[in-house]
Length: 259
Ligand code: GLP
Image (cartoon, rainbow, N blue to C red; front, side):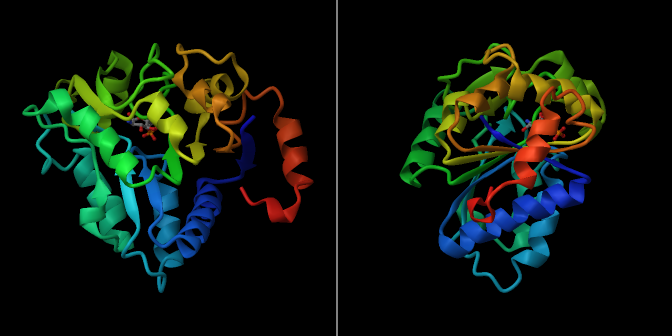
């Protein structure tokens, strides 16, 4: 099963995951990061700023999980813009090495396949950062997504558009379609790190970690992965039946194991 780490705050979660990413980049200067958007990974990116000072990140490569279809890449809420603003610029990454799926309408039929090829050509993703939606989605893989799916166009459910409307003027401005790495794509990454904060994520986290493995809760796909780490605050952990065991296992974990 995934390793579950319950932390007191978002800042501690960010620090923990950032430390792991720094270790990875020091060991593998051209590491391939899987980058998530949304509010959840922000503490990780913030914690990375000071930690990466003096570290050569010029060869670090990255692939975003998803993008809206039909959005102008220059729109401040396109995931291309978000990744540039929150990750590439503050961390000093090389823009040409950081990719997002191409959500342009022209060529959208093969954009998924192109993205898969680019990930494979890079040698695959070393560490994939994940958030989880209230519907249990990871990336934009809404309930019902195939566990074997690759990057493709999906239709967003109303709840996700509502959740994401905070970034737009109104829900009507939230695109209807997205292009997202599939669950099969995500499962190929060598290390999955899923973060979740707050009460609103508690049911999705419990379902993903302890529920049945089901396409109805796409986050449960992480149970199929040999190296998955779940970092949650107390509120997001509040529906985990075995929380005491996770705390006990962490307290007694050999130091050499890392996350
Ligand atoms: C968004 C993104 C996901 C993200 C999730 C949760 O729609 N496509 O990658 O993990 O929903 O968002 P947040 O982290 O803002 O709660």
